[in-house]
Image (tube, rainbow, N blue to C red; front, side):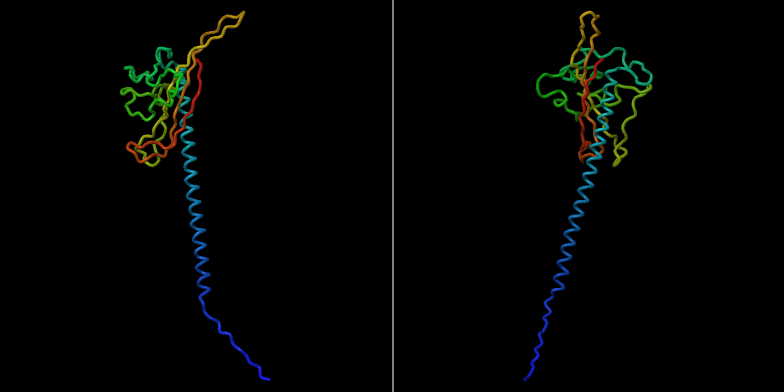
Length: 223
């Protein structure tokens, strides 16, 4: 009986190379996906920070508008103007056509759409106190301890470019008193709606640059 042994020849088909390239491709896909995720998270973090900056600026503008209506320096308690705002100081066009620039941004509340805070041009350009503007600017009509409030810091990307300060309008809503039987009538309380826009630090490539993040806040102030 003859035993025959057969040898099976192994063919070099390059399977190791194919497997290696497949692994490299998978690593490349995972690395690209991870990089995209990181970039997206950085953008989200930047947008959140910019929104928070705009929100804080809006709060500053809201406080400034309330102080404007209050007509008093919060430190010295001295009046900012000789007289408080009256109904006659407010106009349907926010005093744009009025020659008194101290009344810019004082509006009569509308009863139809759009409301004043959507109708005005918040991007209107002009020199405060000289050109008519439909809004008021933070620090232009108020004081802290006898001095104008400190402006918000400039843009980090360009320290020479002054950051857009919060802007606001004041709407006259009307007066309301109280009459209780058996008591003397209370003094008339005038109510005002203050709407402010705060801006973030990120800007567009326009000339002049426009802030990307904007936050609008409102409050009702009675005096």
